[in-house]
Amino acid sequence: KKLELRQIEILNSKIAELTEMLNLKNRYASIEGVVGKVIEESKNNLEEVVTINIGKNQGIKEGMAVVYSGGLYGKVINVNENTSIVKRIIDTTSKVSVQIGTIKQSMILEGNEDKNPKVTRIDDGLKIVKGMEVVTSGESDVLPKGIYIGRVSEVVVPPNKIDTYAKVELPENLKEVKALLTISTPSPQILISKYYCQLKSTMVPCWNGLFQGCNWEIRLARDFWLGQNARKSINIVQI
Image 1 (cartoon, rainbow, N blue to C red):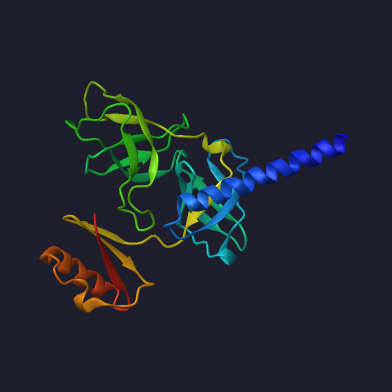
Image 2 (image 1 turned 45 degrees about the vertical axis):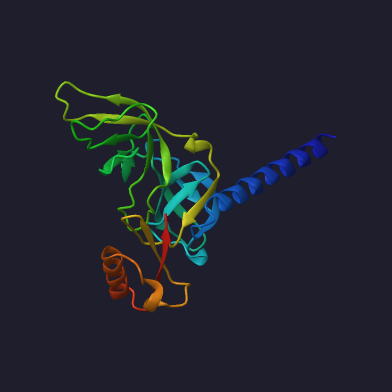
């Protein structure tokens, strides 16, 4: 009977794991990536790194961004044949370019000893309050813009007002997260006026006529991307 109960527990655990991976893939359906899971925690309590069960053979490369169902998890820092090492965003050496709310200025999300990241490089005068969303700024080559990270839980303003920072509350405890998605090829993006230009390598080139009726900024975006990616095309979607 004990053996049967144990088998049921293992089966339920496996079902929960597969469900978590499926939900993860569905949430980031528009982003190309590889689903994996955490198989080992670092034995060094001073660092926040984990080993995942996907590596070079699955197309993983150093520097790739890693997300979970709640948002940004970290990035790949080392790759082996079938495993990779991922540094969490709560690691003391982690730094990510982010934006808060509707503020266009980019700031830096840093990990710290408290295992709760904080946003630094906040200019004096910026109106940041508790509850505002923190997302990736899109300035990184591997991170698409707008990946959710968490919400501001507190804004700390020291007497000199120079080192103001915002504490960030994450949606989940990253130490309990198992299912992860490694982003393999984020789409380069340009947001100009009311148009969203997204580079797509899978589209049939249609450079003539595709941009008819677009304003001059869009045509400049086209010229830039076609100059950088002569074999690719750009899809324009009005937002």
